[in-house]
Each structure stands twice: as C-alpha cells, then as structure tokens.
Image (cartoon, rainbow, N blue to C red; front, top):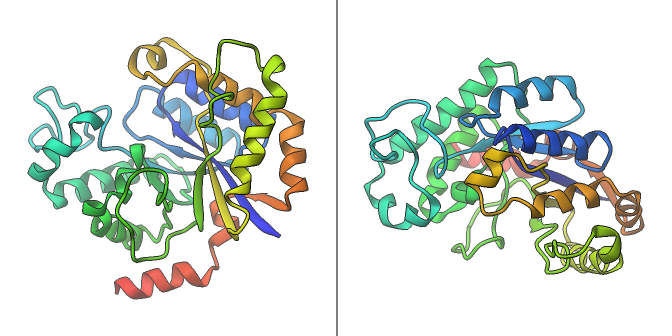
Length: 277
C-alpha cells in the first residue's frame, strides 16, 4: 500500500493558522505539519503540538518572512531585521553568505528542539531549501540534525536535482480553480471539488511515498493583513475534515502516515547520509 503524508505548511504563522491546522488534524486527515520558529504564533503552535502528539511536526525553515533569530547584522535581513520578501529574493540572494543561511536555519531548528518539539523532518517557507543555490546548505542541515527533508521538485520552476529526497513526489492538494473559488459555498461546489481532488491524486499514483501539501487556516487579522493567500485557506479545512476525503484516499489505496513512520528506516535516507560523509 502506498504511503500518503498530508502536511500543513505554516504552523506558527498566526493563531488562526494554528487553529485551522489543529482542526484539520483532530477532526480530519491531516497527519503532519511544519512549524515556523520566528512568527507570532510560534509559541502557541509549540504548545498545541504537545497537546496533539500524534501530529507529526517538522521545521518550516524561514528565509523570506518575519525576523531573523540570530542577527540584524547580515545581508539576510533589512535594516529592521526582517527577512527580504520572496519577490526580492532573486535580487538579494547573491549578497547572502551560505554560512549565514546555515547558521540562521540551525538557530531555527535549535529553537524548536530547545522548546521540546521532537522534529520529524524539515522543509521551508516558499520551498527555498530546494532552490538550487541552497542545495548544499540543505544537505548540511540534514546531516547535522539527522532529519529528512521535503522533495519540492515540481512545485515550482526549479532546476532538476540529482539526489533522492524524503518523499517521492510533492503535490499541492488544493491549488485548483474550483477549490480556490470562494464565490460560492463548499456545499454547492463539493462535487466539482472532489473531481479536482481525484485529478490531483491521479498525478501521484506512481509514487510509493506521496506528500500532499496543504495550508488550512482560520483567517485572523495577522494572516489577512500579511498574506494574500488567506480566505481560500478556510476551504481547505472543510475538505480535510470531510469524511468523503478520507473515503477517496482509502479507495485510491493510500495509507495515511507521517514522515517518521513512513521513512525512518528507509534505505533512501541512509544513502543520503552516507553520501554526505
């Protein structure tokens, strides 16, 4: 049976995001999430994670939103200590030191570990860990913390990679026209939503370990004012907690799991680590 990880990005972004993720786990099919160490909802997310130990929690490494955890004296941040936005990243990345990025991401992981979060894996906000110029940094993080990381290939216009990652394939579960259409209620659009879900899953049927990336959230002021991707996240909660979604997954032959249960003994990860030593 194929393994399916349903992972919510942005745990810690805000209280509303945290509440949406917990709702999707407690009353739905969400198995995993990744936690941001530098956001307004971080401490709340850490407490929530402790309350729901069956939710797998990884690190959601940040380089394009919020503040640095280590310094205001690097090119990673603006004069106020904020990371440069993703739209600015292509322009400013050449001024970044790889060591500064490595140190920042280590600080973020150390913060979560020091607060008692048993990490299952890591990925990154906006997939920056998988940008080609950051591959070596990602390898170093993986080796230092013995953590597997998300394969983001195919989600953005990235260059081809030459090394095996944690999952066979990552797909965005909800990024389709009807699911994103908030002009009508979920109940009115449900049939079309499930047609789109089935089409998305059909792209991953050859994967032994498939990750579906999701972004459930209840919209609070911080999310609404700081992210253009806000109201659509409510629809994701509806789908993730709908029993029909669980039935679809079962009918397709997937077994819901989290990163550590699916992959902790895989030969692929052992190969990655041996190749880095």
